[in-house]
Amino acid sequence: MLQPKKSLGQNFLIDKNISKKIVSLIKDINRKNIIEIGPGKGALTEIIIKNNPKKLILIEKDQFLFNELSFKYKKNKIVEIHNQDALNFDYSHIDKPKSIIGNLPYNISIKLIINSLKKLSNYKEIVFMIQKDVARKMSYKNSIKKNRLNVLTEISSNFEIKFDVSKNVFFPKPKVISSVIKMTPNNKLKFNFTDFENFTRMLFRNKRKIIQNILPKDKLKILKENNDEYYNTKILKYRAEDLTIEKIFTLFRKFS
Image (cartoon, rainbow, N blue to C red; front, side, top):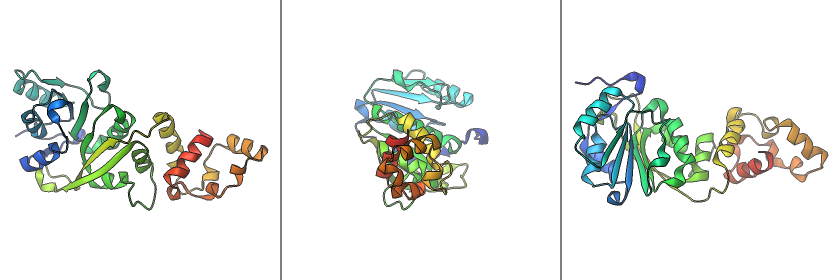
């Protein structure tokens, strides 16, 4: 039996019912190009193919698994397989309409999610299986405290946690419970995501400090010298985690 590689965060999904449930979250597969990240041994891949996508693009970093998948699907004309790191893959050449699906390696899940949010408007939907704690961190609905991940999620997507997944449906069993999430573009993004991402990185780097002690001193000085009403607003006395998304975006427009 193939031994999963800890260095690549591999935990293979082995339950067909869960695989079907995950794939069912992508609507009208037969009308779309589907990108699968980290297909592994093909648990989701087999179900996707049965739903007749226009094209299926597999991105598999592991050389051995890439070879296995290439051999298995060498006669299937709709399957395209790339032996690459999903973090560095060029997704732009894949025609729309397109959707992404994947059981993400735990060790790169947050990086992949943020990369996906940047380009979310290019996709109909994104369905990922990730660690339950990361899914809860992304959730902005009914969240008392803000964090960088749920701010980036809220500003760019309609986000749902669809269901949790037991450790028992993987080989080897992971140490944590997983959750399946779905993201669709909210079409509200009218600014540069990368600039906003950089701003939130600064804002949440020292989330326990008040905003006035985090923002660029030169810009605060200009506001003070110009007697800008914003300099004396209460918002500067808040911590980043206690702000609303509206206040965070106001700060971004004022200080980015």
